[in-house]
Image (cartoon, rainbow, N blue to C red; front, side, top):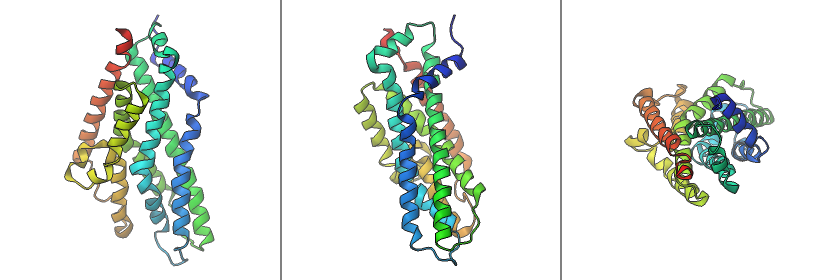
Length: 256
């Protein structure tokens, strides 16, 4: 009898539970937040306004364009690598389960790690920001809803990019090749974000979102310039298409 999707998802979670992926998701948030807050700490004065927004932009801009995507590329390869090692994927496919469901379950695990990394980023940013503002004599109240809103937005805008990463990892089973192709898509993200075609380039979505907050700091209009149309239908269509490719192609070579 075939396993249910939730049973399969539980197995996938258990398989990566003891891996080093969990430690990996701490590296990028710690690196970017602590360095960003440390550099801003010297310039803050008690009269400084929008300190939290400035710290968020300083911390999240490089993180959204490069460090977050790069960390998720590594997570993709590590998740896929657990199946390719010792021909594990062939053993899994020999069981009475759907390879489509198996690929979807792995993608869900990938999204879970993305969610956890954003949670780590949120916690580290808040703690580092509290230290920076208090040590600088800034009395500005922590805008918790503002920080939480942007972290959730970063998570959602990363989903299409993560879907592309997973599709490339499935299509190219050589780790170095899949990592290289994914990095090649990430690198020009900041250039793509400055063109009218940014909506068709998911690797720049999260960085573009943070770039919009640059205007928000001065205008006090959070999210100004980030229109849901045509972004939302385009993002959903691209994510659905590449995820369909990843699900249908997963394990096809081993089944032949």
